[in-house]
Length: 184
Length: 174
Image (cartoon, rainbow over all chains, first blue to last red; front, side, top):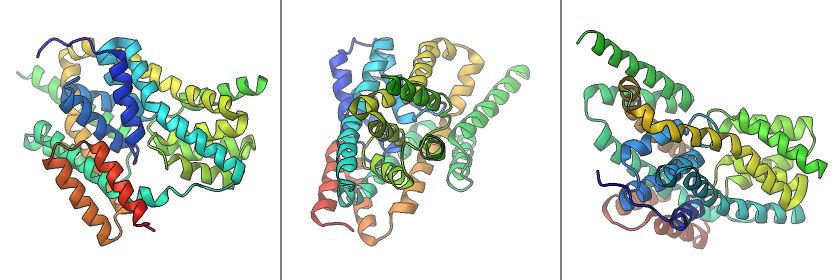
């Protein structure tokens, strides 16, 4: 891997501000945007690093914000992490403040709903593309496919929390690695 | 001023127990904002949830809404900062240990071992959203178009999302 060049804080802020302003659909939609932008377009982090950041991000607080913080940290340390987090949150903050003000003033929700109805399917497409891309490069063996399917089923059908699934997967991988080392 | 400090403290506490993502937050905030403190009525609370989902940010932006009610723009800012502070600090800490953790053989095995599970989680998010928002043929057409554009062309997703929003807006999707 080539050595990381120093990415200007301004660029980090701008990139995450744009992601924060257009990531309608929340959560995974935002993560898919970050992946596309920071892994493939800018090459700021590798796919492995990015996915680890996403996994850590499930622990406390919203993982979209946490993943932004993680990527920012990889680029410029603590300052980079905070820059990315602030850039990401600002658009939503201003939008919510404006909408809250309108709401408490006029007690009516602005009619943004139809626009959002249009974005929903496309946001799902974005997430599917991200999942397919990750699967192509990170899910190669039969064991990996089984784990991916098990995680999918647990989250989609059994409504198991993401954190619990990741902890279980980590313990399973750890046990396997340990077993292999002991019996090598 | 005392109001702002109290607001800060409450949202900091919520940020500290906000494990495992967004939807834990709804019952939690409901109990605190509506039942205990009476800062919001139930209707206001539900409208706040809808409103926070109108924006790109996480559901936790509900804190901004509640803070706005409690203390205007300053209240909104303080509430937002405080609810995100604990998670962000933890994340910065983990990120700072990341390189060292990764160089430990067993930890690396565990970290790499969870990648397929991450893929499963991403796919499950698409599944969950699809179940609630892909209702008509129109939605599937948009899904297919979005998939083709995003998978096979270098068009930035920013434009694809904004374009789809414009389609929904101008055709008045109900």
